[in-house]
Image 1 (cartoon, rainbow, N blue to C red):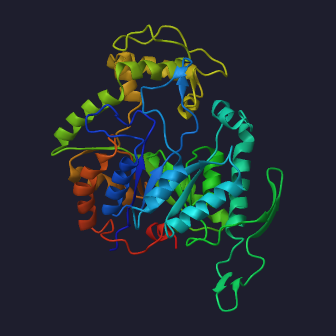
Image 2 (cartoon, rainbow, N blue to C red):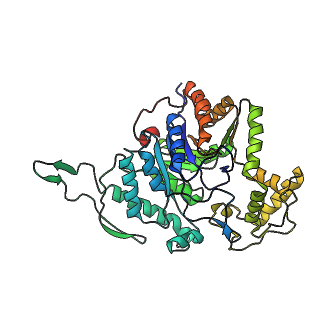
Image 3 (cartoon, one colour):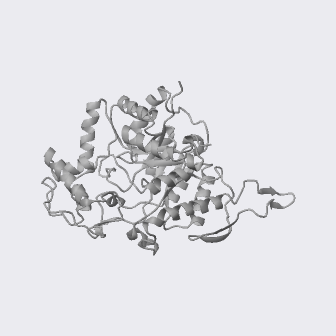
Length: 443
């Protein structure tokens, strides 16, 4: 029986507390050599793609730059374009916002990346709710929530019109006759709707993939519909069996009404991992790493994001505040999407108090527990088993792996887990195609 093939991607994490930048093994998060190291390790392991998020503004908390995590991130297109020159098969995926950008510029950049990489470009289409980030674009919040996905969908379809304004057979380049273009309509476009009113000529000839692979990361009802209607891959947060199967079934079940098949959408949860010589060794390492990821200072900052007030006077090794969270639209943490997870701060605070009391947890211990990010912990065999079982059980089609140390944190996985997956026939030993669509089975 043919085993379902696992898709794997590597995330260069940047600004979040998954990354332990203070670990002696960690390198720069700015220097190009770090991006090269992680990308080339992923390509050596035959991963589908390298994934890069974007950072449009430095985050703040209590009115100061939040510098407990990595601060600062180079431009996505610049990094991916440079990586195209030092990799050969690995897909190159970048997050680009659809709220503050314009379709012409983004389409031009992705079409160029697809040319430079010979068909390996992917676009993670996101929206932004954040007026704080929008200030960098002189637009503030720009759009109410109910219009963000409407603009994103229109943005994407407008970009597709630009990609498709070239068919691929326009260039004659006949030196004898002096004719370069055989089709004088090449690149002509006109798009007029409530969001975009543009008309002209798209300057980039059709790229190897025609369009970049489209990735989507939203989890709301609107986000799931957007993914089902337009995306080639979805970046989910459900990495366990039950939650993963529910998400997988829900999103793939929406494809039919858009005339699509389940094979046309690849579901990839984000996942972290901690490996050890034995399962016990891995769990000991995981405990140490979690305390690196959630220092006492970080624990207080996390708690402030729910309580929405300054808690710097509290002891991270002490109990939770007796007071309730401060409600209101103003958030003490700015530029951080996770604060929106707490839709009912009072209910979450009550839940956390009950958990802390039941397990006798301090603030730091509680934050370590409620912000758990370690998906796979164990020996290489244990982790390979877990990944394979989840994919074969349709809890996902693979995973986007987030190492806690950059850029060398993927090496151990590449050298120990990947060979085990290859031995059981669940993961490729060589690339069989040249484009990212080939790798993802979307061709």
